[in-house]
Image 1 (cartoon, rainbow, N blue to C red):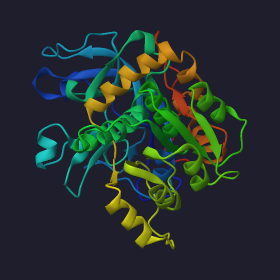
Image 2: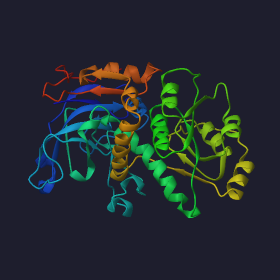
Image 3: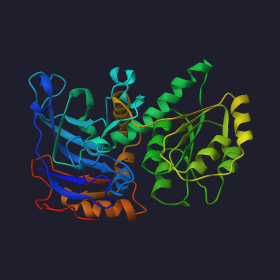
Image 4: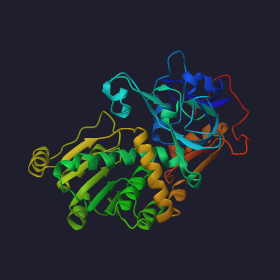
Length: 384
C-alpha cells in the first residue's frame, strides 16, 4: 500500500512510498482494529517535520509515515474486539504510552518521560496511508452524522483538553464562573476553541492579525463571537474595552502574544498555552508587573500538549452539538482538499504557501472501496 513519508533529519524529503499493509493480527490478543483511511488533516506539524525540525522514525525503520489527524472506517476487527464493527467511522488518538506512571493510567499525554511516542510525529508511523491497525484503546467512534467533519476531531481534542483542564484547575476557586474569554489566533485551532467556548455560553473575543472581513472573521462572527484584528486594535485596548478576560486560549505560536496575553488576563483568570514556539526568540517584557499581577490576582498560566481519548470523546460530543447549533461551521473549516496520496507535492505547497487555508486535508479514499491514492511510487524520495 502507499504512504506519504519523510526521512527524518533530511529536509524536504517528503515522498510516496510502498509500505506493508497492516493486519488485525499485528495487535496481540485478538484486539486488532484495521481501519481504512478516508481523510487526513495536515498542519504546520507536518510541514515542520518535512523541514527536519523534529520527528524520528520508529525503531527498525529509516522513514516516518506522517499525518496525525485521521478519519476512517473500520474494515476488520480481531476476534476479541467488541467495541467496533466493520463500517464504524472512527478517529485515532496520537500519543502512545511510555513508561511513566501517567502513561500507565491512560493519561499518556501527561507523560514525564523524556521520550514520547506520537503517531505521525515521533517514533510511531502516522495516518497518511491507506490503512492502519491499532488497539481499541486508541480508537474513538464517530457518529455517521459527523462523517463530513470527523477529520476535525484531532485538532478539536487539543482545544478541548486545554479548556477542560482550565475548568479543572479553577475548581480551586469553588465558585469560578467564567463569562468572558479571549482566543489568540483565528486559524483552525483558534476557531475550534472559539466554538467550544461559545457552546459553553461565554462571550468570546477572537484575535487575528488580518483585518476583517474574510472567511475566518466571518466564521467567528457566525458563532456569535467578536473578531478583532491586532493590526487595528491592540490586545490591551481590546481587553480594556471587552474584558476583563476570565480565560485566554493562546494558539498563535508567538511568544510575544503569550506574554501580552499574560499582561491582560483578568483577576482569578486562567491562561491556556497551546501553541509551540521556537527556541531562539528573546523578548523584553514587563516581568515584574506580570509577576505582581499574577500573584495579587490569583492568576494561572499552564501549558497543554496533545490529548488522550477523553478529550477526543469530548471533541466528538462538541462537534455533534455544533452541528445542531452551527450547522455549516465545521464544513466551512475544510477549505483545501487534496485528492489522493499521490498529490503530496500539492499538499506541502498548500501548507507552505496558501495563506488563506484554514484546514488542508487529504482525501485518501472513498467509502466505496475505490481508492483515490495514486498508483505512482518512487524509488527515491521526491524533494518538495
